[in-house]
Image 1 (tube, rainbow, N blue to C red):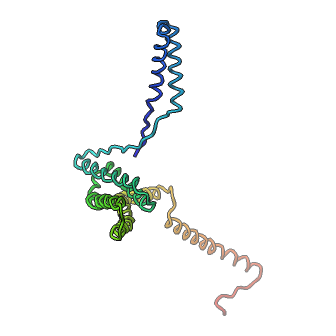
Image 2 (tube, rainbow, N blue to C red; image 1 turned 90 degrees about the vertical axis):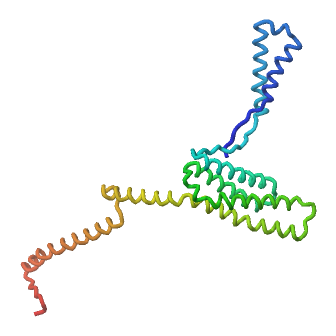
Image 3 (cartoon, rainbow, N blue to C red; image 1 turned 90 degrees about the horizontal axis):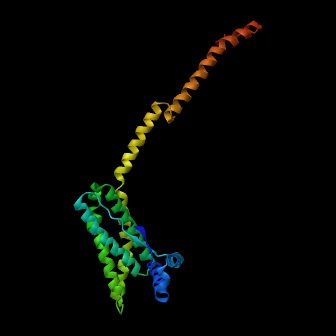
Length: 251
């Protein structure tokens, strides 16, 4: 949904009324250049002044989705009509829990349609949503409104209403899952791209991986050990010169 601003026509009518009023009261005033300029200024002032009092209104309209595939476009158009009926049902039903579930369903449905607009090939992933979940939810809401508006509500009507109310949470979960399923392949592609990038960065020595750190630690340990082994003979020689006798092997 996107918001479209519609300007109010009232400021235009008032601006036109200024000309009409001047023409009726002082028609000769409009015969001169000065009179025309004054009237035009009054008309403009009336228009801009009343525009603040009557700013118009914002209306939410559905963005048209065109995939380039006529068959998919027809499916989306039909499905959006069903989803719009759910939105209207949401406005007509005062129950807050039903409203929350219908809000979820509407949001997920629009997300599905936008994604199909980006990649119509994914329509195969939401066949069950298009052909079952959405039309069934629409039918349930139509039935619920009939029951809700019944003049008397016996046990059978109340039981049917409770059944529909309890099923809406499951329907909303199904809508969310269908929307999420559209991004499975995208997640796999993203993982593959990240792995390729990590491999290239590691090859160019721009990042350090865990294996790099282990290799460096092992290398540092080996260097320290080698340094210690090279230092030992010098220390032995120095000690010997000072007159201390070293006995090896315990003999």
